[in-house]
Length: 531
Ligand code: PMP
Image (cartoon, rainbow, N blue to C red):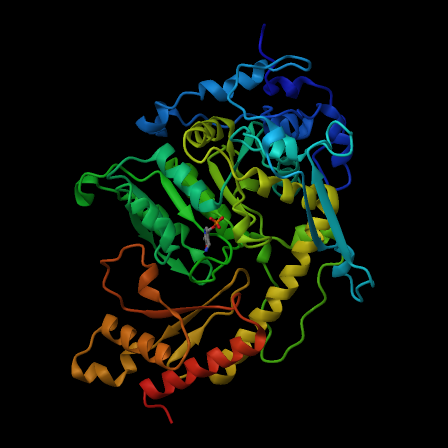
């Protein structure tokens, strides 16, 4: 028997909605393609995006960048069996265990209802979700525990892949047609997919001069070397990127070929807190086109974009009044300007729902997501089915796209309050003569620059790293933990002119943030002999 038709001829199906997806028309668009509902059913984004999106020009091909390791990956023989399953078929072919022996009959969860984010909140603001093993048969849900507790496809369970696809189109509306996605157990894993798909030992990855150290530690373990691109208050500098690539001489870099992967955290960068403006992103994209770069945008903080800090004690402006208004306030992503299909977007629920869910998604051209799915099939398989069904129940059935965006507006307000709190504390307690900071407009991090050359230990011949350590340890003694800037250097061997400490306003409530900065201020006063 022939396998089921693949989803990628969906573009020919008639449009059900005019134009691209919006919060208002997702329901209508869902009638375009039946949702595959069975155990380990196949799905991909082409089943769920709008016809207008699918009809856009196709991405460029990236065959010249796919690593030898990735090229060797074949589709998992056993996972492919699922495409022969037909309704009513008796399956003895797969290795799927029997759902009767899964000891969970039902799971339920409670979460805030979107109406709770209104001011004033109504009296009964909770919503509950329940999943059992027979919801699909009972026609009470399109995804249930029987499916979620079993093996699934690496891309994710179809009902959840549909929701994520819609979310991506509503927020980013990629300008090419064959964009696709795969779920992953966190962006940390998503980055590992990217490294293995594109790089080999000895390759160089370009990144901000201070960068997310876990990402670079992952690269280093594969023999991939980070190379720093200069930054300013708006993050990565397109001019520095262009200069590095224009003048690349393999002989000066141990024979390394010209870099073709840029790893960047465009919003609320970790550790500097910098956010690239729309203009900056366009400049970087142009340089990427000029030098044929793949841009890996790692965006866990994208939705934590906030209004600028307006000074000590200044009240916040009211949050966006509608979900549309909120989406318009966001700086456009690289994915949203990606006419070539050269962007790989790592998006994660870690910072907006919970890191322990271990659910993220990678959006890229179908050619690249296919390679990453092949990698997942023989490594992570997929994020946990339990996590996927819980998120699906919350995001699709309880909140819907509108409710989720209202949640994002809500947490953005909450993080803005904390950002304002840490800024007020820095204004009040840090000695201006040695400590400066740029109020972040996204994310969770505040990057404090220290004028270390004023430190008295300079006279004893102490260098940058010794003084950074002295300040760090004095802070520990005073009961406040901050991160040393050098931990985040892309080039760990680079001699440092500047000194920074990273603080986060995410981890503690307002009173503790204030107390922590007060202690750090006292440490600086003592270290620099400031009265
Ligand atoms: N990327 C960046 C820039 C981060 O700051 C973090 C978390 N600190 C991650 C990725 C990790 O994301 P996940 O939990 O999805 O693996």
